[in-house]
Image (cartoon, rainbow, N blue to C red; front, top):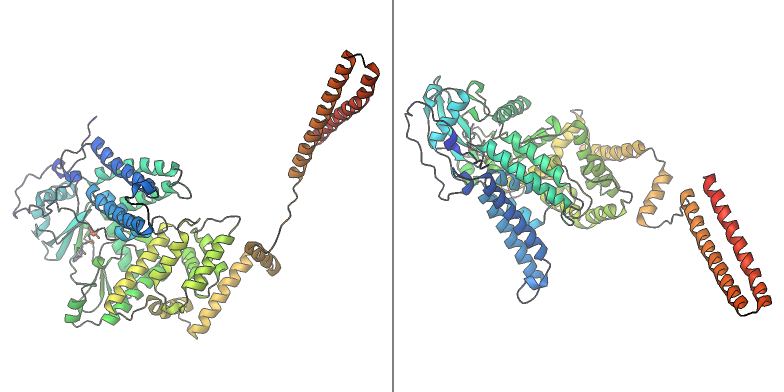
Length: 582
Ligand SMILES: Nc1ncnc2c1ncn2[C@@H]1O[C@H](COP(=O)(O)OP(=O)(O)OP(=O)(O)O)[C@@H](O)[C@H]1O
């Protein structure tokens, strides 16, 4: 059956004539996925062609014949880079689902080589805008009213266009200035088809002897699905905006656009118009007389508030989603991708940071296991040693002047090819911190996230009780380590023994009853075989002697033969008795 991926043309246009001229869309390149006639089978073929080409490239990467003039480290590095660029461009060609999946993977330095992650983080939504007729049709289909019935004016040219939707300026009949976020038509169907194909790919990768080893591709696939479906549910985004605004109701320096629920649906979101200067437009901020240093600190404060106070954070904090209002406050846009962290996870994250700051590899390993970021294994020695090595060597500067991106890069470097399973939340937090640090450094070259975070973290942890912050940090850190020790319930000596064991300073002799039994059985079988061979050899010799008429000699040979036979029977009976006993 030839089922076409629907495009906007399949939406029925409303029976009225628009008062504004529709825009023609401003994408110069025609993407296959945005065409009217694009079959599911064709899509399947396009996606799998990409995957197979990628696998071939990976496979031939270490083969010297695939390099002209022989293999070398430089050539391998150049190929990795070229491959990363090709992946980014192909994902763009494959459209919205793949652009989003690529953007999600750009946080997963624990899963992919650094070059891939770097290229994926450049993955910008460079897709054609859809036409105004399509906007009208979708609004009518969702809200049951025409654009002029709903809005006094509506700018047909979008203010911003991305892979999932576009934003138009408008005015309500009651006079409020708003923006209307409209979802790309046919997105739901495209997601269904693509995610179905991606499931097959995830299964294939899971079974792949190299790619599947130590990776939970199906789990990653499920996580991607959840995030993608959530992102295209605009009612959910509206609810997130409301929650976010509520969380910051006591902070006058954070602004969140109000949601006009009567003008919103699954695919249309009408929000208060809240213009501002993008936080990355440094010159414009300067020209407006805004204090860049202070803004960098506000950014950090806003994020720590979300993570430590609310446990509800903006998981997509790219500079385009944060603007500065004329009064110097921060405006947040786009609440499609939010992360939630439970109080217990927050506590564990804090413990990881305590562990890093006090360079205590055991505490880091323990908290990472608790976070689910590290699969518990019988022998944690190698991982612990890697972490201790990182803490001792990479982090030669004081913790407060470390950059978050360096710390996360180090962690990811260790994680790559190790039994780490960073949950998406963890990577989102790391990405949010790194992005924020980048923005902060752009605003104020002296900015250091750790330094900015310290007073705020103190304030939150002391819960307003206030005391010497350094002393408190030390105390809390000690308490955190002690708590985990007592939670384990192990006396110090046992812990020391485990430590020596991990370092390889201790030898262990294991005696297992089952193993003993098997060993005894093996040795009995060996003995039995020897008796049987002897018995056979003596019997054969005796027979040859009898045939040659040397009967007396044959009787003599029979004596050791009989002894061997007797021993053999006794052994069999003993083995039988022993087996029945167990
Ligand atoms: N309430 C608003 N007031 C003024 N401008 C807005 C408002 N909401 C969004 N915008 C503008 O539209 C841009 C895109 O909005 P938003 O990020 O919500 O859309 P999106 O489709 O989710 O885009 P992306 O996927 O790239 O984040 C913002 O960067 C901002 O410039």
